[in-house]
Length: 325
Image 1 (tube, helix red, strand yellow):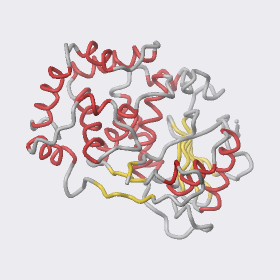
Image 2 (cartoon, helix red, strand yellow):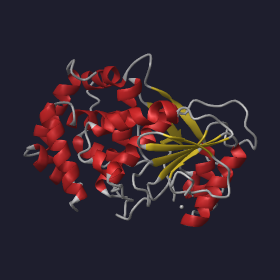
Image 3 (cartoon, one colour):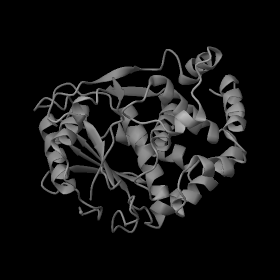
Image 4 (tube, one colour):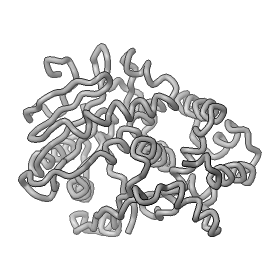
């Protein structure tokens, strides 16, 4: 099994002036301070309940995020404008049926030249971020069924994906390393729900000659609410099952283990765990926004460490302390 964090998104104006991405479908709208929620065949939750909470979490750690929205400076990973509105609002599309989700996927598949494998996996996991980082699409029912049926709780993937999207917008980067995007998504989940949910996917079929082969996707369980990630990661530290900084920074989605995903979360959490560290993290983000590569060398230099061992000493000690909670 492999970890898959469902993400991917799109772009065009309703009476509200916000860009319209799927004009052939009928949507109801709910406008929040920083988000536009569009629904088809379902209600506005979880986006109405958790979108602004996610923004507040990320606002605490991402320098200039408020200006991105207020001054319409929210940018796609390539640096282009995300919309033409006076005040940008990130759009979340919530659909109630597998058919409607399929329609959204096929619009983006054509727009972005997705392969059959891309389409199949996206339809199976039931959610994705626009590749241009402008919106999020979530199917609230079983995406494999044509109709609606029982709606599923999608609040964790909403928060995770929005945290990732806000990170990408601040850095203007499409190619941020996995440890940054997934790790900060985990951080946003933890701050709001006090747990992180893991999604596993068997990627073997994805890379076969037949891109439409069946892929085994299923939720691999949550490290909460029975036990929080900090408690479990402290047990790993005590058991000598630590993941090095080098391995954490080079984690890949197709080989990721639960331990590594936990350490990605812990790394991002550690880097913003105090006011002093948060300031350094903001310097790190600003450097990337200004064109620097998010390398280990830049991270160590920005945080004032001479080598991996010095960083790991403080990182592991923090993980073992009561401050990691």
